[in-house]
Amino acid sequence: MSEKILIIEDDKFLSEFYRELLEQEGYEVTVADDGEVGLEKMQAGGLDLTLLDIMLPKKDGLTILRELSHEEKAKCGQIVMLTNLGQDQIIKDGFSLGASGYLIKSALTPDQVLHELRVFLQKSSPRNDY
Image (cartoon, rainbow, N blue to C red; front, top):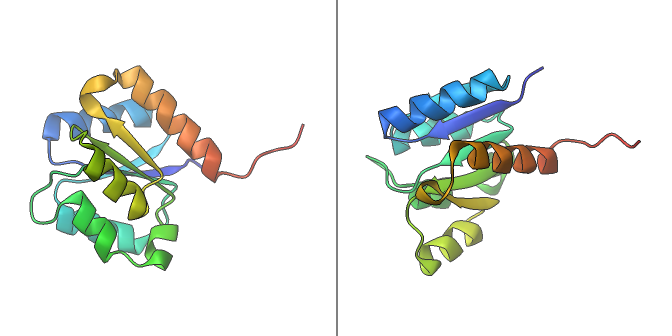
């Protein structure tokens, strides 16, 4: 069974690019292009990882994190902020509201983003002892 990833990103080019990249790696990917739809999909749960932009129409990423209950966040797998906002306070807010990671889009190549996502997914999945 493939891992389920939700991408909440309003930039159509980026969301499609990341969707295709992740699907090629065998992940099951869903995309939401605004904060309200993203919140609904997060509340539905069943996710292994959520990529959450901050600057979104209708509801920004930090508002989404504020509105999710602890139980709802637990159903979203690792929540990774994927944004171009790199101010220290915003990063702190993201982590204090429940984000597991924070990636700056403009500072990473697609391969680096993919590597980071694999690391986050390994943290959330049960490990096999060798």
